[in-house]
Each structure stands twice: as structure tokens, then as C-alpha cells.
Image: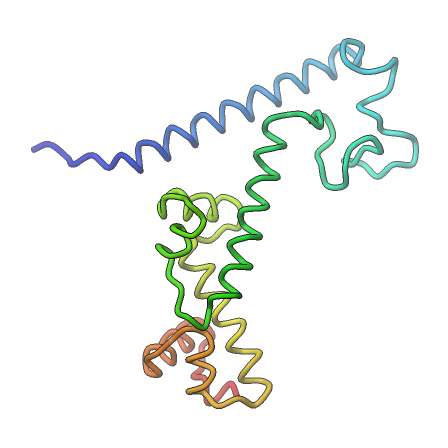
Length: 183
């Protein structure tokens, strides 16, 4: 019997393999630079602009948070920044549309990405799938609202749940107690 092919899974696996190869190549280039004493691409003895007293891992010539040894124009760095911006946009969108009951598919449509790809990207960057991020953000907001004294029914609606029983079930599963007890 022939197993059905899921092209999204194949594409995701290929993208992961390509990303791993790029990372390995960058690591090999960094090791080679270190062996050459940075003579080929850096001023004499200057390891990528690290000045005495600079914290280890952050060079004075790189923007804050950029890894040492990665050139500012490096495509991997640009991709990393783009992913960070996408995640920030997703979180902002969730916060803005939470009360409307926004779904993963709606987020993907608004962001102009395939839902599977977007979920994989979020998982790589945050450690959790997009649906889990959405639920986590809903539960964090629900906790804040409940702690401020709002009624459970009102909180459920404000975080995008029309069904109070479903909201209570998800809340208890995530936090270990029901919303009334939390309040």
C-alpha cells in the first residue's frame, strides 16, 4: 500500500535540512576564521570588532543582540530578524483580534502565509505551535481579567470563547483549576 504524501511535511523537512546545512556551513566558516586568526576578513587581531571590556558574545560593531561572527548583511541574520518581526506581528494580531475568536487559519490568511508553515515558524522561534501560542495568550489575558475581578462569562467572551463550558475546560486543563477558583 502506498502512503499518502503530504507536501507540506516534505517542504518543511527540506527547509529544516537546508537551514541545518546553512548553520553548519556558517559554523565551519567561523572556525576557519578563528584558525586564520581573523586575518582574512578582520583588521589585525580584531575579532569582529570586540574591544577589550566588551561583554563576551556581543561585539561593539554589531547591533545589540546580533551574534558575533555574523556579518550585518548576512542573509541568516536578515531571516532571523524577519522571523522575529513575524512573531511580533502575530502576537499583536492575536491581542487585537482575541475577542473576535481569531483562529490559526485567520491569522495565516491575514499574514499571507500557509497555516502549516506559519505554525512551524512559530514553533521554531517560540518553542510552541501557533495554536498553543494562541491559547496561551488567551489564558494569560483571562488570568489578568479574572484577577481584576471580571466575571467568568465576560472574561470568556473577551478572550474569544463563546462557549463558557469550553473556556472553563481549557482554562482548567492549562492552569489546573477552574476560572471561578482562580478569581
